[in-house]
Image (cartoon, rainbow, N blue to C red; front, side, top):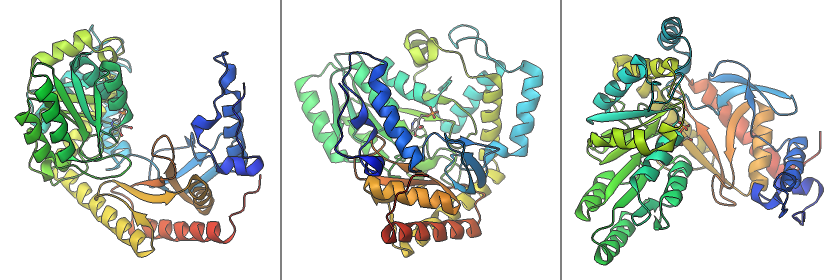
Length: 436
Ligand SMILES: Cc1ncc(COP(=O)(O)O)c(C=O)c1O
């Protein structure tokens, strides 16, 4: 049976969310027809800002193409390349030299012969940077998060996880055990209450507490020192995902762990290279040397998949060298100046800016109708920006997830502000939706 939706015509493109349009059909392939039709309708009305293609190097100005071949050029706040290392000369030169030395492929799992001297070097450099005895590199950050949670936790153990933790952590948790306890966002008090109850009932079970140093849709930050102390008190292990701030925030690039004096002091740290380190890939860092073998023997996303390529490993190592240098410190200062300027200007123009200063500047837009229209008008006005809607965030708390880079100029930020204001005025004035 086809899913029914009360909206019709263009209204349909402005309402609903992706999960509303999947039919209850026993035919596993046919059940997606209605869903495809809805997305095509959104595209036709230019309110599908997703799955675009970038037509050149990532930079503060970019050109992008939508599924129907329309191209848009503009100031770019939609890419995650916080320190602009993806186009850095030293990173590109190192990548080219690595291709000459190793070719382009790791050609095997890290559990077999897929590690290269480039990836081994990266692991020790990262362990040193993060203040841990060991660091294990994964081909994706997603796999590092999912796989670490899934490998550590048995079905009889417990996971206590922030309700807004990233999908890789949530999916890992639900696949590891049925004992998943979500806690209200950032609430250390709720973690403590839960741990006390769990420990009263069971002294033997393992407990993993999971959070992020900067939340990717809200840009807010937990009190990590307090959370680690609570975990230690109740014999729980803390895992912190540092994907969005490692390298980009903090005088030395240690992210909010550094800002809170916690570098090397939480039980486990995992992260991704895809935001600041110019490559696919991820890692988990630990003081427990036995974890490496455990992951190599038990963790699907490390064991049953091809290892990070030597080119990617060298890119990340070179990015890390820059991050640790005075140039890295200067890039972070520029990034932070841009972040603070963007946040201030948006607030001055009565946009609702969320969270703490990080390379992600979330702007609350509200309903999907408003978010889809303002994003369309912004794109047409020359601003590339990502809109997030359900299931990335809860229904009707759609937002722009503005992603800042060190190389953005004040002029580009001002241009974005003008475009955003015009787009908002257009929605408030016209709220029209005409098919192309
Ligand atoms: C908080 C967080 N963790 C993990 C990931 C996954 O990282 P990757 O892109 O390397 O798979 C992401 C990226 O979306 C993220 O935002």
